[in-house]
Length: 200
Image (cartoon, rainbow, N blue to C red; front, top):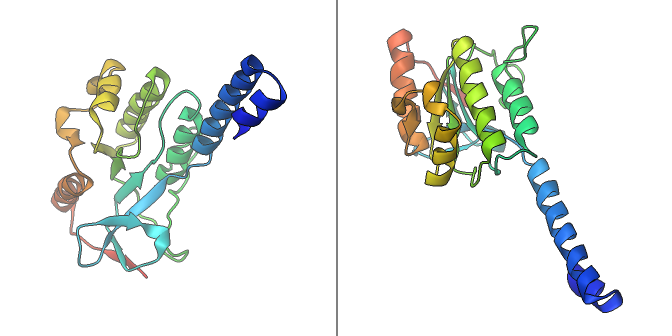
């Protein structure tokens, strides 16, 4: 509609230029407002839903499952870094408790395993891929085991070219969130007893 109005009121060349610029601005604005969602297991199913939906969701202490539903490129990499720092408590230069989307009286246990659901990351450029590699390094330095789930082939290829496999092993890449969560639960059970918190 914007392009049509610009072509009618201006000229064809200027109208098309206005349309291209407007399209680019809408893409950038939409990707800047996306929120990273903490997920919990819906009771009686194998589905992971956002914790803030407030249905009965199970969350295992020490395990954080996050979904980042937007392309990861130079324009969103800063937001990606800040959001995951907040969720995982990875701020440099000081201690910070991880943010939870559960009830305010819930006691936050240190995160030992994080599953990043990459199904919403439909595209990643070199800058975004380097941000994931840096996240893997920072998680390893903080003692957090990072698992990536549902990366599409093109995103995984970009991440591999950026050096992801120097920071994580192929065993940390999973086809589904359910598989990654099952692996995370096994890892947490070997470290201590399993306990679940129910968000209502």
